[in-house]
Image (tube, rainbow, N blue to C red; front, top):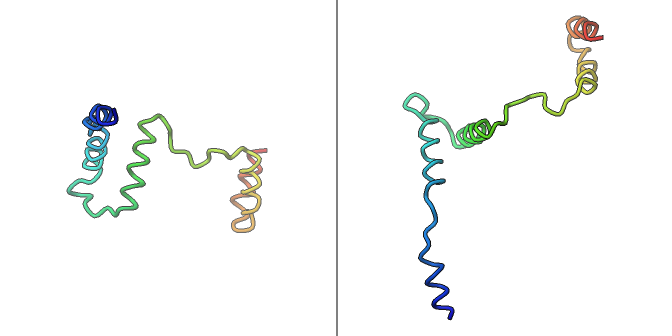
Length: 92
């Protein structure tokens, strides 16, 4: 019957372990010295910490190959031509 099925399923409690893990991680991030961290920064720090623990490193150049980087540097050469031009010459 539906009652028997409901009694089999409803008493199962969800595990609180993942929730407790999140709060513990937040407690480590927010210390007495870092107690003014805002919500957005806290979220970003928690996501970075999770990704790092999963084996993902933080890379600012991921997805950029040398061709894209050279194209970007050449487009910025007008801003400070001496520095970028000498750097581009050293790459070729």
